[in-house]
Length: 290
Image (cartoon, rainbow, N blue to C red):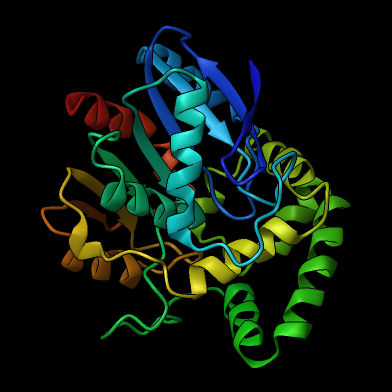
């Protein structure tokens, strides 16, 4: 089911509502670039767990209005708006990669609405004390971030160029684009089905342009708008040592700075394997905290 949710500041959010209609609601923050397009195996796993599976286009992606200059913390107002529109007064949440910081914002700022959250392969805050941010990161992401800090105008233009390249790519070409980020662990689960989903998700999220992608970059690499020390709810954090999208050091740093976190830092996982191989484990953990 599809919904259009109006926000208090006059924007609209496009929301997809799948899984079990009368199940326990779980709101998902997918990665960057983002769309609300749901991955079939994720929905099937949610249905098997009795979960109502809710996704949305973050601002600027797909059919959601842009919100230039948004911070990570701004997502909490959007989550409240979605839950209010869908008559949900309690919701679990998980997110992966670029969705990870947004899940942590919910954990810090939505204690009255969210009883537990799971963050998978999340980046740490830029400038985190004691973290070598780029160590172990694939060249594609390193180059983009370095350009972001050295020349914002050029970085914004490159986002549009990269968007055009992704929209025209086949599943095989998408894997080639991501080759510096895909470890052998991730290559093993990068099936034709997953590759095809990547293409469709990019097409849906980037259809209006690269604004949402750019807004995510500004949010991730600027002040997040909340403190990790404010998190008081149960949080599951998962990160794999074979991750080249978001290196293992980020997960280890977050594990050391989130109060009371349950950290599962694994030796054999990459980035993509956290959902392809462990989503049932994530859903089990969340439901235990319902």
